[in-house]
Length: 188
Image (tube, rainbow, N blue to C red; front, side):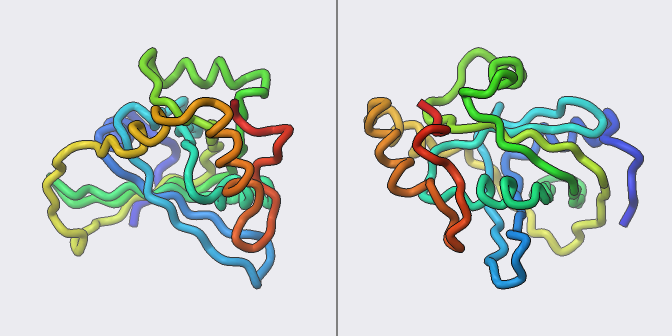
């Protein structure tokens, strides 16, 4: 394993070319569940500086990451090379949930291009405190066939009120009962 002072240009290029990454969070309580979520879709991850990254958070069946970040802020993002030279990069830090109602949402959103997929409920903004990479010799070689379009097709079939109702049913609390999205703070 090698520690890096920051996300340099070589690491930035590696991070931005990976089609999938994994997000790990946990509640402060020792009784709570650790969560690991895969993230993907081209253009939904951005390197904002040597110690800062962000990604688009979409409407989904849970809101563990949001709840855990509100509880304690701890987060790790892991990127694995499934093609080319083996490599695993981990970004440890503290994240915050930026909702569409937050003043800096629009500025952050500008880092993700003009063609944003429907269903974005938040942006996860991460202050990176530790950057490391390791060999990844045991990570399998996989062929990338492309992004799935199922999430986009699902959200396109819903109007804003439908998405609001879904988020209210599925995204207000974590599986451990921690608050996540509340009706007054949901994306619209």
